[in-house]
Amino acid sequence: MARLPLPRILSTGSAHIARSREFARTAADGATDVLHPLITVSRGLRQLTGLARQKWLATPKEKRGPLLFFVAVGVLVVAFVPYGPLTSLIALMAAAAWKGRVRTPVRTGPDEAEAGRLQALYDALVPYFSNPDDPAPLFAHGGQWSSAFSDHAFDGAGRLTALRISYPAYFTDGEEESRARIEQVLHAKSGRGREYRFDWDEEGNHLLMTVLPALATTIAAQRFVTAPGETVLGFTDADAVQRTVPVADGADTRDAPPVIWRTGPRSTEPHLLAVGEPGSGTTTLVRSIALQALAHGDVLIVEGSGTGEYACLTGRNGVLAVECALSGALASLEWAARETERRLIAANRARQAGLPAPDDTKRPLWILVDRPSVFGHLAAADGHPDPQELLAVPLRHGRAAHVTVVVAEQSDCLDELCEAVLLHTRARVVLGAADFEQVEAVLGAVPQTTPAPHVPPGRGYARLGTGPVLRLQVPATPDPYDDATAHEQRQAVLELLPERPEEPVRGAGYEQFDAYDARSAEPVSIPAAKVDGPAPPADTARPVPAEG
Image (cartoon, rainbow, N blue to C red; front, side, top):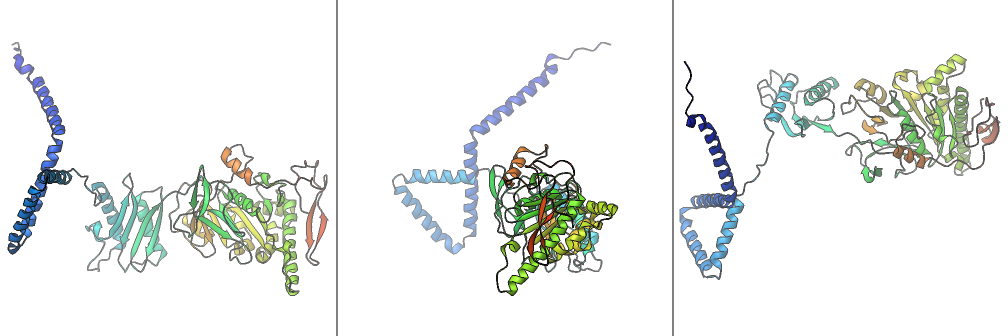
């Protein structure tokens, strides 16, 4: 049986209804826009009327009569004042419009998603902060996070950036294992890939967790505003130190909080040890220290890697030598030991005679040794003593002789450092991605922040003596002769390099190195070993210390 077609009114009725609804909605929106001021004033008048009614009901009955009298007198005064009724009407409309305006509601707490995160974090901490014998527990299964959490803050992605936790007094917050478990749970539940700082208030039973911003990596090598004997190792958090220095960060100049290392006779940490993985920035740190040391002293560089990272310093004013070979390293370090002894003897003689110490004993001497473990292997193969043994005298007596030793080594060769280096280097730096065990093995303490899994070069931790563990970002000081170096950073390093002397270096094939006899405390000239091959050009020649 064939179907009959629907009537036209039924087949096209839905389209007419949809168009009618759209027309009605458009008309309503237009009317709302046109009548919006009237709606706002009406809403304000209604609210003002409600406030007046509440005020009238709150007024005692014995005071309502005088109140009506004063209102009537005010109305009469306004009525007889020129333009009074018009002015009062305008004032009333303005007050109604201000009262009836649509205001954005003020957020007074976390939204539903953020409250869910806080509740999940609370439930995760219950097994660690709860006790079945506690009559009024802060943490209990089925409890609410508002009883233990406060001062919470979230970022734009809805992740926690700050949180204050109140924990029971019986929690063993004095034990490292207990605190580490809580920090691990908070780190995992709040989001990985960020650095967190945990401040434990053991007296008040509070734990403050904050997310630390990333340290700036755009600060390049430059002349820092420091006093003689002060060296900027890098920059840290603003609330970690009580000092700032002006730095050029790109095209802008701002104040940055530095990590200042003080050397000299009154320093408690006269020598430095830097440890890190390959590519972590230890060589950059040593290069930065060398550029700062050349402003007030002399520098002797011994490079064990042999990659020419310090070639830009060769032959510069104030650079005594840049040694990459075993023979040169042995001769240079032996001279450094004798120079330390000479300075001590000369200063002691002057002190016994009631005279000030000679000027040549007060000029700072910096001994920078990068990867000494490589020389240890070569020396053992050739039957020579380990060059690290020659560092014992500068390390033990360098503070009184104005001699500073900086040693940089890779973390996998830390066990090959001699006892003197490990004992006398009280200023420590760890660079690169390192866990708590590695940081504690070098610095002797665990940082209050969680280490990040991926860090830029020059990023790590520093500790000066028995002070706190500070986050550190070393200034960008790359090798200016490296083709991969950015132009701005290369130019910044080249501007800090001292000039080369105009007169040529003595010797053609043979070179000399000024050493001193520790017994007579008088300078003598010792012939250096013969250099294999042709003599280097005058602009790249460098003094080579003698052997023995």
